[in-house]
Every structure is written in structure tokens, then in C-alpha cells.
Length: 239
Image 1 (cartoon, rainbow, N blue to C red):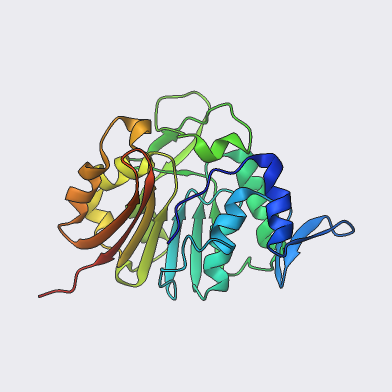
Image 2: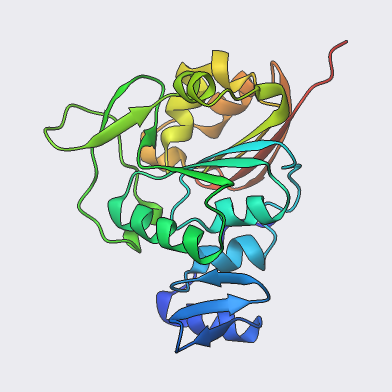
């Protein structure tokens, strides 16, 4: 599994073309094979070309927190996931995700939710950043006049009848992984497999705080630095 790559925006289209992506000027989308995206983003290359999630077993359901423009959700659906619950707080990214889901005819597989994952119900305060900047921004729970709903794992699992023993939890939410794992572990531990980016700098807590909690129930492999990386955790077999 490769770490997320920091690519300059002006390099992304060129990298996409090198990797075989083609822009259809008539339809107004990028495509390769049967996959289509309205706009090219570095995260699409991370997911489809650089193997960020290739180690996951996604045959069942996937909760995708920080779904951005739908790249990972579409990847999971095409890899065989029966349902993907795609959670994205940023309104611009969410709108583009809806467009990409339609382009790929995956409305019956991907359930998009405009919310932020958190340990408690409430509001997510959306920072005033554009679509490109939201991939490095933690939209935090808080008391804000205007915001979007915060959704919890417990609420999702109850509302959508998710059996954690057959489900994967993916988090790329720039800091929410600390809130969810440390404060709602009773629901996190129900999932058979986890993969998440960790961002200690966003919350001023060490990644070891997450790994110590997770080691109760999971075998985890973390790749990266103390400041940023990816952890893949598989549920330990019952003794």
C-alpha cells in the first residue's frame, strides 16, 4: 500500500495522461476503461493508479468517511462492494461526487451522505476553503450557526443495517480519525477491517494513541512518518 502522494495541481493532468487517462472534450469528463470522472484530481491517481486501497477486502459494505469527489467510493464499488456509504462534508466536493456517481451509473451501489463523521451527533463546521484545499482540511465538530450534520458510526449502522463483521471502515478525514477511534471505539471495533490516514498535526496527538487503542482488537500496519501516514488494521481472530 502506497502513501498518499503530494502532487502539484498543475502536474495532475499530465500524470493522468501518462497513466492512460483521456479527456473527452465532448462529454466533458476524464475516462479510462469504463471509469469516468468529471475533473481530474490527484486523489483519483492515488486510488486507481497507485494502489492506496488495493489491500482491502471490500466484498461487503464499506463506510467511506472523507469520500471527497467519490474516487474511493467508486473504486470500492467497482471492486465488488455491495454498498458504499460515502460521507463527505464539503459541499463542493459532495456535489462533484454526486456527478461522478451518475457518470458511472453507480446510484444503486453508492449511498452519498453530506455530513462529517464524528463521535457524537451535532454539527460540523465547514472551513471556507475550495474543493482542492478541502483534502487537507479538518472540518471539525463544533457550535456553528451554519454547518452540516455530524453523523456517528452508531447512527449509520442502525439506519443502514450495517453488520460491522462484514464491513470495512475507511477514513481520510484529516483528523476525525482521532475523534472517532478514541471516543467511539465501541462502534469502531465492530468493523472487520479498517484503513485510515492519520494526521497527528491536526489534533496535536500522537498516532500511537490510536494504535494503542486499536491493538486491543486489531493487527495494524502503519506506514509513514509520525506526522502523516496510512494505517491498515485487520480484526484479530477470536481465540
